[in-house]
Each structure stands twice: as structure tokens, then as C-alpha cells.
Length: 163
Ligand SMILES: [Cu+2]
Image (cartoon, rainbow, N blue to C red; front, side, top):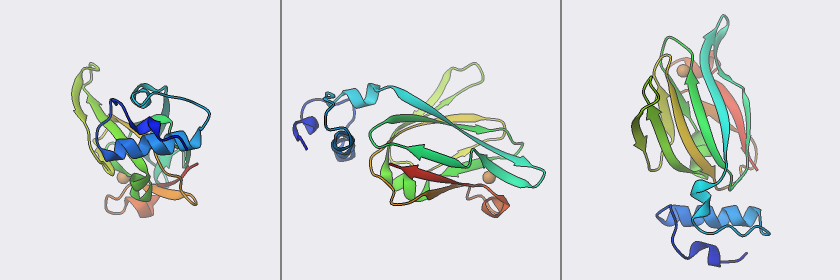
């Protein structure tokens, strides 16, 4: 693996960003991105719907696949009348969070939250966007869950794999 990728200026800061770049390039040795390009890479949108149905609660879809080094926007859509959350659990240790973005009903920015994030709660009928870059593969599918009391047992779990 080339090591020049961690040098130079980057839009990301901190050692984890450096790790992300190294891992990203490890997955695609023939492609020469500059160090700053990761934060502007094409973003793949992944919708995660949270809700209730007649026979319980759900995350929809219930299976997700990600690739290391690719940028994703997780669109957390709560269609329910109660709050829910997305807890990445083990997957949370294998991603770099670029930001969590919250906008109001007019689509105006309310907040951008940056740093290491493992769980995001979403109010009833609201949507939050979570921008991530997976940096490490999972050996097997891991569970994304809603950890609010009773919700996991009601069905709020999904499998995620990072390749
Ligand atoms: Cu829930």
C-alpha cells in the first residue's frame, strides 16, 4: 500500500481520518485520490425507515451492505408517531462519521454535528441525515438496532455488512 495518501492537506482532521484514507485506499489500490478527495466523494444514499406495523416495529429494509472507503448518506426516516433511534453498535466502531445533519421543515440547516457518533435518535415524523465512511470490514453481518425499551424485541433490528 502506498503511504503518501496520509500526507498533505485533508478536509478531514485527526488520526481517524488518516486511518480512513489508508483503509479506503487499501480497498482500491489502483485509484489515486488526493488526501482531500474523500470528503467530496460521490455519496451513496441509503434510506433507513423506522416505523410500526400491525405486528410490531421495524427497520426497513432489514439488510444493508456497505463498502469501505465509499461515502454514504444514511437517511434516517422515522415515519412513526413515536421517536426511534438507529444504534450502529459494532458497525459504529468501523465507520468514520463525517457529520450528522439536521434541517427544518423548510430544508434550512438547523445543525451539523461532527465527531464520533454511535446512535442517533429521530423524533416522530422526522428525518436526520448521517454521513459516514466505512473504514473497516465486518467479519460477518452485524446488527443495527433501535435500543429504546422494547423496540428491539418488537423487531427493530437489521443486518449490516461492510465489505
Ligand atoms: Cu424504536
